[in-house]
Length: 172
Image 1 (tube, helix red, strand yellow):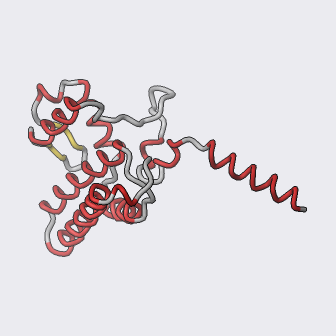
Image 2 (cartoon, rainbow, N blue to C red; image 1 turned 180 degrees about the horizontal axis):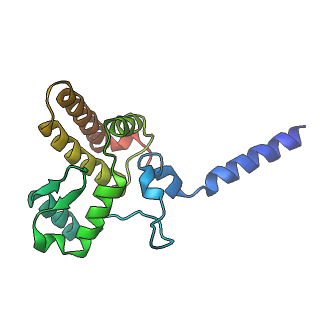
């Protein structure tokens, strides 16, 4: 009996150890784990791979974003919108980050109990979700405005916690 228990525990440990880190990210941004329709690749772009990429993301956000009635986000500046990184930005903003208030609340809840420091792609996507949430709060009225604002604050608190207390978390 003890032998069977040890084998079962060893099997569970090995199964847990071999699970790809990609699946742990699915907990925060499930849309990043979908397949692209046109290829067999996962839909998992990352914008920030260098300091230049960070500056470019900042430029995208400063150049003004256009959010249409269907909640599709695009860069207004045509020159910036023509860059390769702009296509990745478009994919992240329109295919990966959550847009409904219930999905954003779910993300906030998951972030508040996330057991380790966020990966750069999760941090980046959370910031972009905050940008979208701020836009929706600014465009809303009454109770909806309060709901969007509360979601913004919850995302802010989760990011602040990630930045301020990384030594309390396990490295990713």
